[in-house]
Every structure is written in C-alpha cells, then in structure tokens.
Length: 418
Image 1: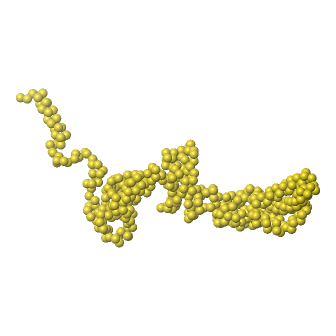
Image 2: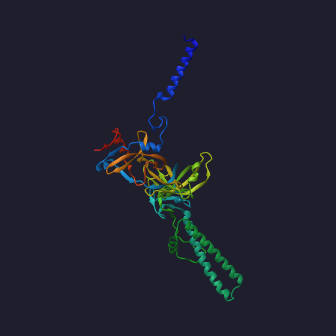
Image 3: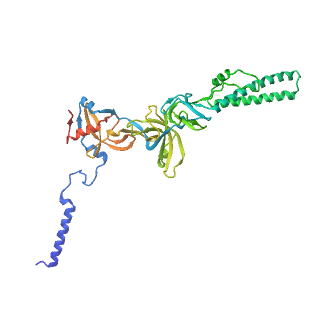
C-alpha cells in the first residue's frame, strides 16, 4: 500500500514532466533547415522572398493615368535644408526720392505701380530757391568772365613790365577765387538734377553783360524731380499744391525684377551654408515652382534668442510673382555634404503596399511589377533606394499611386487594366 509521502512525490514528478513537454514543443520536430519561428528575416531576404505582383496596362491607359517612366541611374544628391524666410526689397536697387529745395508741387508725372525709367520726371516743384540758385550761377559766371579778361590784361602788362608783380598776383588770385565760386554753383545745379546740356541751354538764353551789377531774368523756378533708377513706383507722398520741404521722401522707386529673401538658418545647419551653395525659393502660393536665388550675404552673428543665422539671397523675380514681405521657404543645397553615386527616385515613385515600400518596375512591354525596395534618406523631393533597384531598371516616376490603387483591387497574382 502506497504511503501518503510517496503519492505526493509522484504527483510532483508528473507535473515536471508535463512542463518539460510544453517547453520542448510537445515532441514535434521542425522541418530540416527551417528557421525558428521567433527569428526575424533581414530586409534584403524579406524582399527576395516576396512575390512581385504585376499589372498589365495598355498604352492608352498609361497615357490616361499620366504614367511617366524613367531609367534608373546612379547620381550625386546634394545635402539640402529647408528654412523659413521673408521676401524683401532689393535695397541695392531701391531709391527714396526727395527734393533738395523748398517749394510747392505743381504737377505729377508718376503714380503708384507706374514703371519708370532712370532720368524720367516724377513731379515738378515750383521753387524760388531753385530760381535763386540759377541766378547766382549766372551772376558768378559773369563775374568770372570779367575777372578772366582782367587777369589776361594784367598778364600781358606784367610780361611787358608795365605793372608790378604784386598787382599781377592779386588779379590772378581774384580770378581763381571767382572760378571756384562759379564751379561750386554749377555743381549745386547738378545736384538739383540739371545736366550739362540743361545748363548750357540756360546760359544761351542770357546775353552776357560784363558788369558786376549783372542780373539775368532767365532763371526758371520749376524744378523737375527725376527718377534716379529704373523701376516701379511703390510709394508716393506728393499731392499737387502741397508744400515741399527739403529731404522729405516723395517717392520710392524699386526694381522688382530682383528681390531679396532673408532666410533664418538654424545654428546646427550653419555648416551647410557656403558661397557654393545653391538656393531655391518656394512659396505655397505657387506650388511646384522654384525661384532661383544666389547668396549675397551671410551674417557673422547668430541671433541669441532664435539661435538662427541670417542669410540674405538675391532672387530672380522677372515674372513678378513674388512680393516684398511675403513668407517663403528657402531650399539650400550643398554638394559637399551630399550623397555620391546613389540610386534615387522621386518621392512619389515610392508607394506603400501591405505595409511595405514598393516601386513599380517595367518588366516587359506594358507590364509593371511591384518591386519591394529598402529606402534610405529623403533628399529634397527624391528618395534614396538602398536595395531593390539596379541601374538600367525602368521605373514609374509619376502615376505610381494610380497603379497601386488598381493593383490593390486584386488580392494576388497578375492584374490587367482595361
């Protein structure tokens, strides 16, 4: 008869036996060469063991779906960062126009939005000060001519020993003084915008009278204020009849064919910015359009609060689409930090099917296979392909989403688009 202790030992032994069978798989053997169920396959092996499902698309359907094909080639991709920015006027091509004299506006020749040429009148000012400047010039010219004639006589008399050297030197000094005054008043008229031709015409109107009391009534009080450069009028603060004070800004003219964009580059990306960097400006208002730009200035100081570096680029705005103060994005490329000899396709060429990345490859005429790929970094709008594609493969660059949608309608095997 079994004792109570022996019965308990048998129960414990039976329990340990059942546990051993459980952890050993119940005595069921695995097929030779099979991988344990808990071991994961490598990405490369997973890609090889998947079936490449394909779809046949006739040429007319390819055109209707907008399929665009391209051959895969190795290429060098530039490192790229995208930073925020704001469009600004090109201050090297912008001018604030004001008057150098006091007066009153008599007429306007330009308005907001008007495109003007360099030297074109913007407005006319009636200015007594301008008339006085002309009169002073003509008077100085008359005194200079009289002094010049007197000096030449003194020169002849001194050579003939008819006057003392002291008198000769006095007349020469007087002539040089008047010549200086005459030249300074001429320069003053040039600063008002008068050209050499304008001054010559004014002189022709006046008959010279060789006298110290000479006054000439040919001075014109109307001064035309000219555009200092060609561009568009973007500011105007002038009304006919309004009084004008010197140095008051009346117009602002700017060449909008080139603009600036001030970009803020994060401190960590400063090494990507250099003189050889290529820059493209983009705006959400014009999707898919790049505006070529060139770096013209890189700040030497990092903003202590934002931790960004200001980079100024000059943007080609020949189409006139960009506007000052518009928010934009700047794509800065630097080949020194790029990827060399890699296979890459447009980002839209890579699709996700059953939680895996695929690219459609043309296997034969009108037949496209969903090729499983392993992807790398995204550089701009391109995606690096690490495995799954080879040089020479013809892939679908545009329209891959439509192919994926059509292929998803069939569970397995070959699909045909009608």
